[in-house]
Length: 240
Image (cartoon, rainbow, N blue to C red; front, side):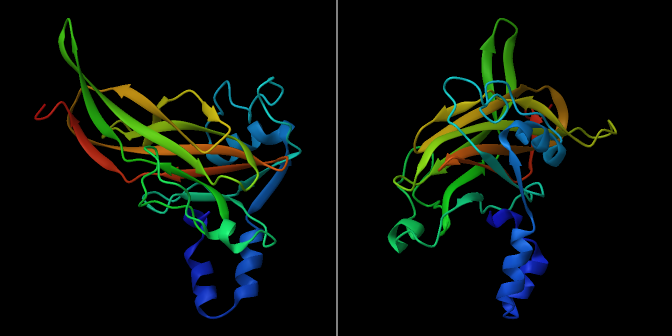
């Protein structure tokens, strides 16, 4: 995933040490049996896998058979804007399949592509505020959307995504915390998205961000990808 590559690795590549860069990337992978995937996710990201995910409950009838799950060892970098590219494709695939940017959809605009050499990309979209009419007047909420997009025809047979909405409330001493987690959206191909939402009513502009977690299966191996949005500051409502 592009959003996981550390700056020092980029420097090594710039110096021409391609072998060192490759080994550094490989050392960041964790491969575990599917039975250990949910606990490994918690140890890396610090949040649980939602109920209904095949990563947490692989014995569900709708879940594909998976031998192992591949993780990167670090959480996504905030505001990378690259998306979290994951599910590496083998060199044996034709170049047209390894570099095709994927089809444009309402979920993933044509301006965003999947990086060459990868089958999938997950994206955390910037949070935004919505309003509702209610018996009490106008209610407000913040929403964040997570997406998982995969190429067609490269062996991906299952994909899902869930979304976390994070907030850093000023002066509460907690720092960044998850204030809402979506359910799990899944499909066999090629795009899936879901939103997390939290009611809001606070003075001043508070920072929010979205984190998308995606799980895709290719040739009996599961892959986990994650991506953070930019930090967005919103008051709720305006001029509170």
